[in-house]
Length: 235
Image 1 (cartoon, rainbow, N blue to C red):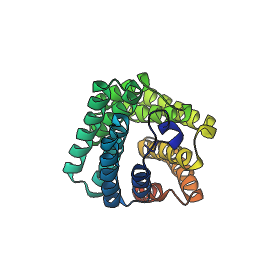
Image 2: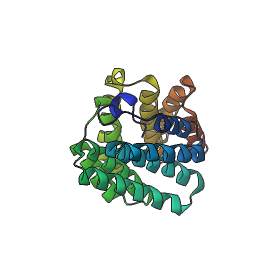
Image 3: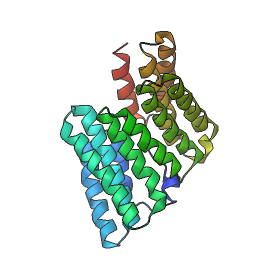
Image 4: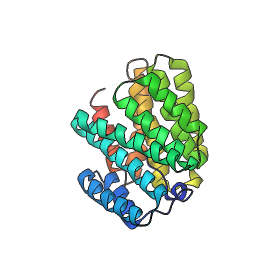
């Protein structure tokens, strides 16, 4: 997930280090992103900005997710899960209810890495129940729930949620910047392609093509182009 600066403003003002860390992550420079995020955490702690600390930890969890997907090293998945839980613990301890949704979403992402789709679906549902933010981002949360539900074997319900999430992203693009909208929309198409690869190959290829078209239209979608290329090799 990539959260827009507009959505972040609901909770905290991003520090310069935090913003640079997110940019480095989206450029596939994950070790650089980790170093910058540590600087952001130090800065937030000096200011006693608990909201900033929680959000930085949530975004560090996302860096660990990418590192796991690149390396398959389980340690990164475990670090992601720890950070997701830490984000929730901080939010609950300091009554930062506006961050519950983000924390539960990260926990759902971590559960997906471990193949615990039932638990992931539960955490994704909690993320939607506690959601604060744009309708476009809510669509992103919803399609992730759809993926988890689909992988539990409830394919019809999962597909319905995936397509509903995609529609919400598309109908509310103007709430976020183009890059963020492109990340979410191409991500949903990519998940649809992956899930339907065996159940409906022709439709899967159509969704993969749509994901490719979006990724190629935005030079900033470095990670997404790599992911789509890797998925394409499996067809």
